[in-house]
Image (cartoon, rainbow, N blue to C red; front, side, top):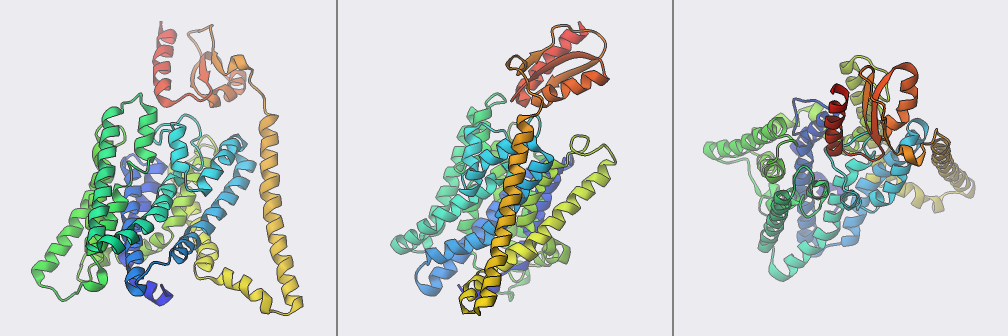
Length: 480
């Protein structure tokens, strides 16, 4: 598809909707208690992606009467990979310098992040999205990118085969069937899960089979709700109906963000389907040229955030987990620290968009390399030296910093095997009571030099469910 054709497909309020999604996720991960369901912003992202990608594929098929998979996949790579690589390289350096304790997990997660399989890696590890003792995995948030990557790989092929064999009308039916299947899988796993079933909870949240409902609902909508086939010349009653759908979707999303919490046992059964339905309702209104709801989400600050939503999503989790107040940063004004952390995320995402994403997306970097062979030998030599120098610096910085982090981690005060699970036998009435995971084990020796310790109960790899029972047990020892 040509750049002009893609420009015609651009619908500004969709970026406004992306902004709503990333703001919800950002505030949730910032720990804002007033938005307990902010994690559902990811489901809004899924619905948007399903709609936009399916429309791109269908427009390409209808224009050329065929689907150029190579062009489609290269376009996705240009759109997603440069920013991701930039974030990963920066994370390696930052972790090596400021959080060497996390270097092993980051390195071990990298292959799964780069192959678009990190969500299943997290399922295999029984990683709980909502519960974590200590620093959560710094690349955990890329699970949603993995789900979308799998969608990008499979759906274009399936869609094209359906179009060729069964006709366009059946694409929406198949998409709805897949969406329904995902909802059924979600419901079945939810019935089997409880607070102790960490593995099942992990599968419910991170699994492609249980969390694809929004992607395919958006895809089904894209087949029948085509912006270029819609007109602004409609009756007042029809316009009111379109706006009503938008308000229903927007306020429905707002309610899921404000009133659904991960602590609610019905959240997994209802939250994902509701968020997907409300998201599609919002999209239905926003893409219609007669919508009076659309200008509200075309507000310039929202568009600015929406255009950087991918970068904001990639950066925010890493920045937040490496700048935890009173842990990584000195205690101070909570509001001031949170504002500073948000501004840092926005700055990094803006740099990413301007200097990484747009140049690759528009082919400027690729054209620069292709044009090398047409330049004079002297200029070509200078360019080769420049590229070699940049690559060398990247390798030296990331490799050197990573090696340093491994060295620091290896030479940190080591715990004996008997200390991997440590419970002090001599419990006194006076002093600090410590219960936790490996962070408590590491901090114990420094803390006991400053404060009397009444009880220490810590184990490497302890999860929050076990921690609650340990706290209850320890409380009885201290108080009795």
